[in-house]
Image 1 (cartoon, rainbow, N blue to C red):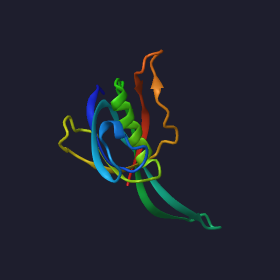
Image 2: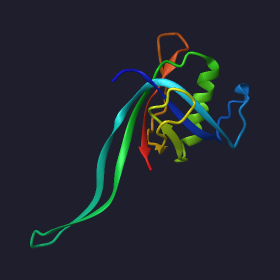
Image 3: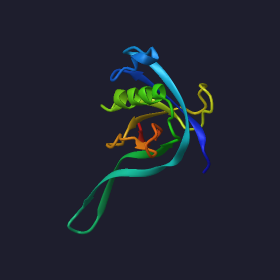
Length: 139
């Protein structure tokens, strides 16, 4: 799958990018190039096995997990905004993810939460260019 753009809409609550003019409790959107791998879908079930071997399955829900790889984030301002986004959703706060948007207009937004525990950027050499590999869980 080739590179494409994706759109993220979140409410800023932590690590506010004041240098970018952002303020707390304000909704912002990011359109960033990268790759969003179609979600893995798995079923979450509880199974009980009787002594006689009969199985009873209780379907709890279906879970989707999107793997996302951003392109290089090359400016200090963009790095601050992306860090604001990650910190603002790190506590399980829901946000909107649109893996098909190429502009700031929604195409197919999905409600998700951050599933990644490691939020470290990957740096290219000694340059200030970073990218992220993240996972978003559908809700």
